[in-house]
Image (cartoon, rainbow over all chains, first blue to last red; front, top):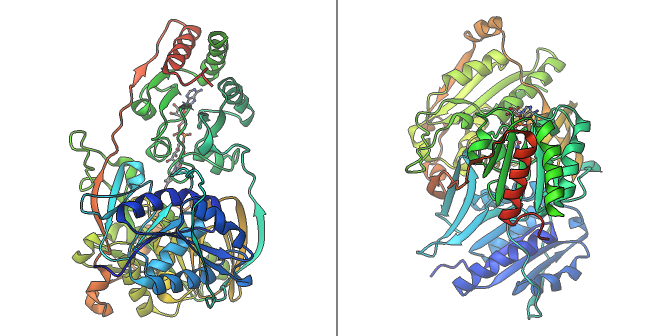
Length: 321
Length: 264
Ligand SMILES: Cc1cc2nc3c(=O)[nH]c(=O)nc-3n(C[C@H](O)[C@H](O)[C@H](O)COP(=O)(O)OP(=O)(O)OC[C@H]3O[C@@H](n4cnc5c(N)ncnc54)[C@H](O)[C@@H]3O)c2cc1C
């Protein structure tokens, strides 16, 4: 018998913690083991109930003024202390940028492995935890098992859906843990301007790439998106090089799963395509009949987006009446 | 600022990777390789810091590999690195992020005397994004990730880093590990002159024994059970017609028939 037991979830983002609880519950039930959520912060006790209602059997609460905002060293010292004391078998850490660094350092301190950014987590026939992640720039999915415990995985936002909350019993364990001070001083925080609708939540995304000539031409996509009840997305060069957007779809950006993704003036480079794998239907509009986007599309139109998009908008309006 | 260490990886050029459609295996062995994109940004940033501080700063690159990486080391030296270190061992073939960071840490300790370690945020091929943080942990240093702007001011680094919904400006005392994004700069392309000058620069090759490392540390802690191309089951229907209107109408009809529009 292994001395490691239980499935833990931790994230500095409560929503992500709730999402991970769904998967944690599923794995713990198969393992006949328990789910614990690690709640770290200052004046955060009020969140414990929500964690229990979403599937936690136990909430380890570490409430301390030094933990008011995320600090790598301080959060790491707490999490490390808890893992060493209670020996969970699986630790799921929310794959935010801070969470990923935390998982990496925790694993290093414990001499164990990490499966980062898992889009899938399952037990195989032998009962081993298998994490699935995109690798080789979106060309492949790797399945990863662990040789030592605890198994640490990181889970991005929106991979799992929040479970339905239920009234259930759980235990709140309040702990007093020594907190290390942080070595990184935050001198300024500016909120990022984000699009109002989260791309991950959209049912329809009309997306543009470098085929769009001017920022103002975005209106063509917005009008079509309006007819379809969707939002506008884009590729990385439009955000990074042209600064028309702050976010993008793809491997290094948002991974989306709409019912419909319309790719306009997008070549279909693997790093972009990696973000749209889970779309139900993909439509491609591109001038170049050899563009790789056609290889991953359900419907392809060889043509100029400046002509096709307005015509498509009109045709949809007519047919949807 | 005296010495900057840049961690470099030779990565599979994922944009040129082919897949065997029958088995969904990647044909990695035959794929071209290159300096991992993000690492090139890290090196460029080191060179820019050096240019700002004048000639007194040295830039050393460190690579952990099971392969022949001379070409990318020459490229790094031509860009402006002063010396390249490579730890080469066949047992690194299945190395994971723990092992990579462990060997890098061993090499960096042996080099010594550094103020700043720069890494790329992640590598082009495995895309794990863990090595910078792991390395910092092993060296007991602070780490700042996702940095898109960097300045060295005396004994501190001021960095602008991207989080999910905010941009943070942070200060950290040197020595420290900083991982950079591709936004931070545009890496230079070395001139012929620089390439010729680089051929005189030194490449130091080490094996595991030179570093006195324990083999069990760099045997992987994870087991990659399988790596397969995802199944793509797309319809690949080309919509054609006499006019733009006809094409648009056919496409609209298809989307309505799919049941994805008009039924909300
Ligand atoms: C490590 C790494 C990570 C990356 N991550 C991402 C990521 O997450 N997301 C991302 O998007 N990219 C990412 N990239 C960048 C990626 O490699 C490509 O550069 C990018 O996706 C290409 O964007 P694009 O399709 O808009 O532009 P291009 O490749 O330039 O394609 C433009 C297309 O528009 C077509 N076109 C032009 N005019 C018209 C017109 N009038 N009508 C119709 N079609 C037209 C052209 O035929 C062409 O196919 C990453 C790159 C790296 C190295």
